[in-house]
Length: 477
Image (cartoon, rainbow, N blue to C red; front, side):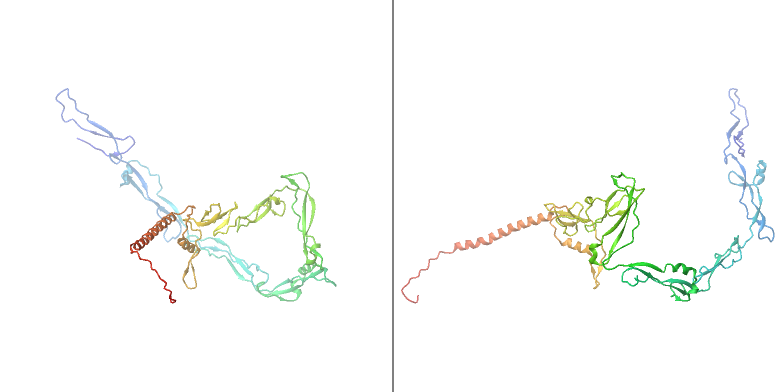
């Protein structure tokens, strides 16, 4: 008789089975087998476990006729077996299980709150004192933002409106007059400009200004501008050398040798250019006037020639100081790089140019083919490189005009070049030479066969006697 019992699975739980002796053995040497067997409990096989499970919270439930405010929410409690089956709560209670989860709690439903704005502020002052471009503005603030389903806040919290149009009065300066010398034609003189009060009622300077009474523009600004109405000037006389104003002083420099200075006081210079009024006086005017003065805190500078990129065998060359300033002088003229690149003989072949080493080379995408003397013979296009792709151009007739690259491809296809890009003679040259040699032999043999039968026919003719003439003294002979 076998008894099975499904029990609660605890740590170290076991299950037993037993049987009863129905008949004792007749022999004293024979004993009955074991009457009780024990084995560990296996979850969901020989034993089950139980536990409480709570559901999610429900929505907040309010009192009768309430739409917001204080309420409560609930969740359900179940007794779950280890195999997932829901059983009665009594089972968990019988096993002494304790539920520590809360099944009800208070909650609050927010009431709809509309956006709350402040009153509009007073209109601010006009952004322009005159004209028609001014704007008035006023603002208001957000006191309370909207919540839940309340009325949202507007996006615009600033309002503007145009200002009343007011005339603009302003002082207007004219251009400087020509330099005039009193009671003379040249020398020291004055140039003047006028000041007038104008008004414009639209946007400045689109609307043309109109002159008005000077009292409308005010006297304070007029007194300050009036001091700048006259300016001294100079009218050079014929034959005089007219000089410009002095330039600003240069930076303080020391006399240095290989980056080292042997003096504590440097010098700085300034210059003024000479403007020659008449070509006849060019010889008596200096080219430039210099002026130097001692200075302190000078620095040693180094000078170096700089070069630009080559363009049509020409490049720019300039002298640069160690602080990055381009200067005139300072670099040794003997070390000045060349500005023009020459090749001998000149590079006149198509697609050729003068290389930095002084020999003729080919442009990118082309291969040099040299003569036996080492000079450039011609430039042939490198296979697989298309260096000049251009779109087709339509002529006035509507037909497509091939671009430079297409015309060059067509020319290269129909031109027989005996030498390849690598400088070697092509194979077809040898083939043509061999065919020409055999053709000459064939012509010689054919000529021999044609001429040989004519000689044999002449040999087969019978010999003829020579014709003899006798003179009988007749005058008619």
